[in-house]
Length: 46
Picture (tube, rainbow, N blue to C red):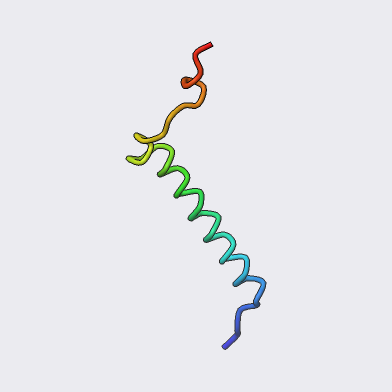
């Protein structure tokens, strides 16, 4: 049986982390936690 190269394992790990962080960011920005976010530009009435 042929073993996979370490470079492939590292690339897949980096891809998994990138997709996880992207998903978490989208969930935080548009999901239920977004209700608690404030707009800093609305805080300053000029």
